Image (cartoon, rainbow, N blue to C red; front, side):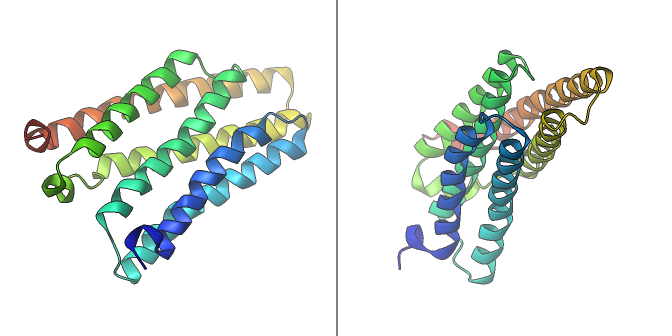
Length: 193
């Protein structure tokens, strides 16, 4: 079996599919739909841990897997962030910054010469960024479930939305920092394209 068709990569493809399903579910009315979106996101986040763990245990870590895995993460995060913009939970400019950073980094990875690919594995800051993004998205989904279920008063909902705003503001700063760090640490490989 080729590395592209290995079990870890098949799990990564599942994450891409879940990222596509997520927006279709989250916009359905009612708390049950928001709970379903929450479950989809959790399942997708779990595949992020599972595919990497299996790849290491099966010793089939590949350049293709190292590339497609962060792309799948980005698609999942972007599906949630763009959905939250449509729901007026966060401003559009935050999504624009996150999308722009990911387009730049992913574009560079795709155009990096093959010999340089081994040097562009995700940095620690990128992994922390993804983990924090997942955490804030999960918290936001829990807020949506509670709001749809009528468990929040007006004051509680307003405070929660303010907390969501500032949490995503922090994500924007972290996104910019990790992107700048990626560009700096890979400046040699980028210059050699």
